[in-house]
Image (tube, rainbow, N blue to C red; front, side, top):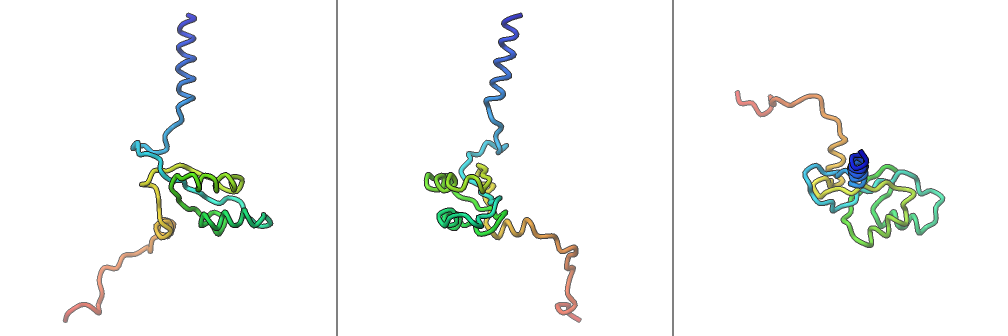
Length: 119
């Protein structure tokens, strides 16, 4: 009885200690996804400069950066303003790709053109 209780506690604590992986394919997490959640209005110039150095200019803007010590230090400087996620390289999107993902579909498809038709 006592050993069964210990086994169940050990199993539950082991499941709590292993965090769920954000990438299902087992890819290594190589980039930070940084999103500005709070505005930098009325904050010191060093905070605003850090945001500019990371390439963040407006609220809810998302940027991707590789895992490096200098980027980690910049994130620590602005940790109260941003949310940070670790993502694999396959999840990294350029500014244009992010815009295309948000864009609504046209609602129609062009089937042909009368201008290009031959008589």
